[in-house]
Length: 89
Image 1 (cartoon, rainbow, N blue to C red):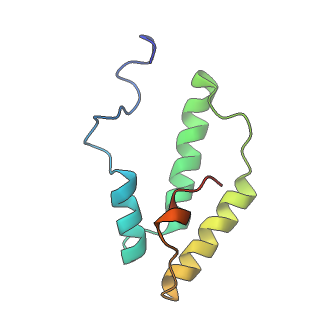
Image 2 (cartoon, one colour; image 1 turned 60 degrees about the vertical axis):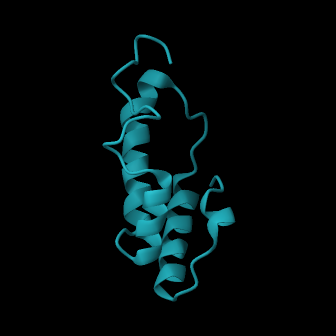
């Protein structure tokens, strides 16, 4: 990470943010909606990407549809396993 960004973005050792494992646990337990998590991520991308230019292409419609489908599967008791949870959109 370059010096200009240091301290402004989450680092690997930042314990104030939930890990992907904790988010997945919350999703499966119904304590977090995938749609809400998706919107939080979209907001973070919109907030930071102008400066860091890390996202080249973003399919918001597909991301939101996938999140809604995940919420439906979780509500039906058919959450997908770990191998699908970490797959990119």
